[in-house]
Length: 129
Image (cartoon, rainbow, N blue to C red):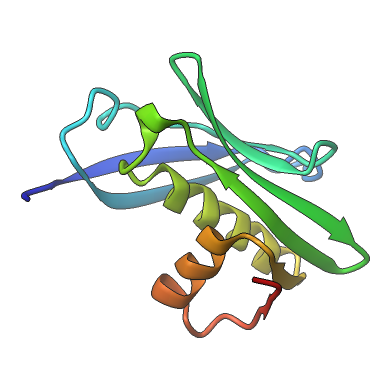
């Protein structure tokens, strides 16, 4: 299967921060309807989640905070968005948030655990999976 490299610009504005943060990712994505569009990652700290909304669909990464620890609990991606790198983008953004805030990382979501082991094996975390 051939995939094209598509540049996605992800804008993340953390409500807990006064400074907007823009992150760029280059991901291999199959030729999909939204592959060339910008996907915006929203961080909703009061709800404990990161989301990507596209054409009425919502992908999400849920987490819980306790003291200086963040626990990633669930990644949910609608069938229509599966296999397009959306879960990876959410995991990467959530982990970057944790690193930026110097939080300890716990994982009870199998997808995030797999992502860390594959793409960030140097990252220290505690697995509950």
